[in-house]
Amino acid sequence: EAQVTQNPRYLITVTGKKLTVTCSQNMNHEYMSWYRQDPGLGLRQIYYSMNVEVTDKGDVPEGYKVSRKEKRNFPLILESPSPNQTSLYFCASSLRDSGTEAFFGQGTRLTVV
Amino acid sequence: KQEVTQIPAALSVPEGENLVLNCSFTDSAIYNLQWFRQDPGKGLTSLLLIQSSQREQTSGRLNASLDKSSGRSTLYIAASQPGDSATYLCVPMNTGFQKLVFGTGTRLLVSP
Picture 1 (cartoon, chains in turn blue, brown):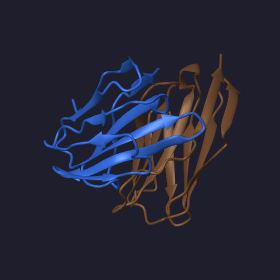
Picture 2 (cartoon, one colour):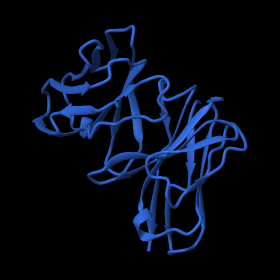
Picture 3 (tube, chains in turn yellow, orange):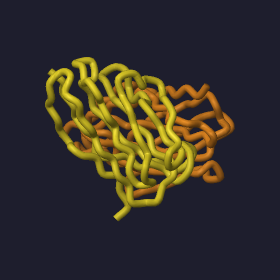
Picture 4 (cartoon, chains in turn brown, green):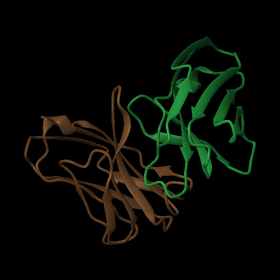
């Protein structure tokens, strides 16, 4: 089954404790991206990747890092999480750029206390 | 810059009604348009994908139309059910764009 898998689904952590949210797709997609969703602000792009070793900032990259060492994986790293990073996070992938059909992960609900 | 507007922002109807959700976008040079639903606090479920060469797409009780030249898409929901209650998001997709542009969605509540 074609899918985008995020882990964990739920995470509560403390300020400053490094964490990684994993994202994996099994469709051999080139394009992957991360979004966060906050009430009243909709979905905002954090980072995206056009292919292996090619990443770039989205609209709200501060406080986040990403890597794309393999085509299927695109982890989101929070080196020192802060409460303002409490949000619902989504990973998405598509065959090429954002003009092709998008597939989303189930979301990760992150709470930073 | 692509901007997406969805009307109405919220809709509350009794079960059984036929519904129309509207989406307009400013940049008509799109490759595809995708409709999603999102349940509260949950992920995005893809409902329909309309390619730019198509005028409509159907899946069960859902029918989406696309008027690319005027920058509009419409999602029709026939015989609405309480299980249709969710937020519906329209996403026009431009090639060469590096991000998806989302509207604020239409929040639908269908009462039994």
